[in-house]
Each structure stands twice: as structure tokens, then as C-alpha cells.
Amino acid sequence: MNWQSYSIANYDDCMDIVRSVIPTYIAPEEVKDFIRFLENIERWSCRYGVVVVEQQVVACDGLAVEGIAATLCWGLVRADWHSRGVGTFMLRERLNWAQANP
Image (cartoon, rainbow, N blue to C red; front, side, top):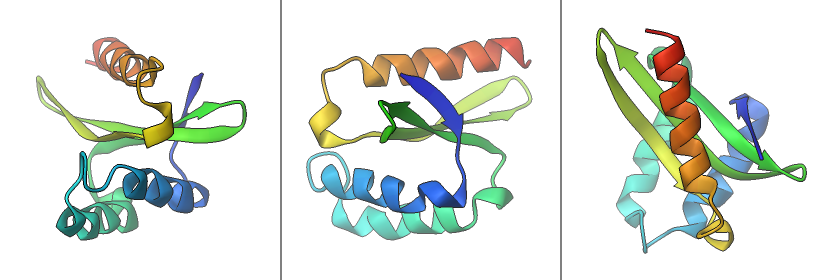
């Protein structure tokens, strides 16, 4: 499992991930917000990336840091990868990055 910076090449994978968790975790009306986020990602002060396992993108997540505050951004795990430790990995990666980049 590894974390890689988001690129436009990951757009379709991220959209597949968000669709996989509708309506259990994401309301259908929230999808447009996620699309707007991805399409304008350079505007946000968010370090955004994807989690890759065996050459498959299985999750996407980000962390925005402003001053001494950090905010988790759009952390989503593909439905068929739930309960496999991906969410824990994502959180640990984001917190480690925030601690290393005060």
C-alpha cells in the first residue's frame, strides 16, 4: 500500500471510488462538490493523493494545512476495500506528513 500525489490521470479512479460509496457514505448531491474539488484542485491548499495497492487506486484523500490547523479533505476508500486497513493507512500518512511539515 502506498500513497501517491494526485494527478489528473487519477480523476476517473477517484470518481469510481466516490460512486462506490453512494449512498452509504456520500449523498448523491455531494458528488458535484467532489467533482468541483477535483477539477479545481490547484486552487485548494490541500495535499491530495491516492492510495495504490497492486497497481490499483483503492482510495483518495487529502490534508489541508493552514497555520497550526489541519483539515482532512475528501478521504474516500473504494467500497470493496473497506475493513482492510486502508483508512487507517490514509490517516496515519496524513498525520505523519502534517507532523513532518509544520
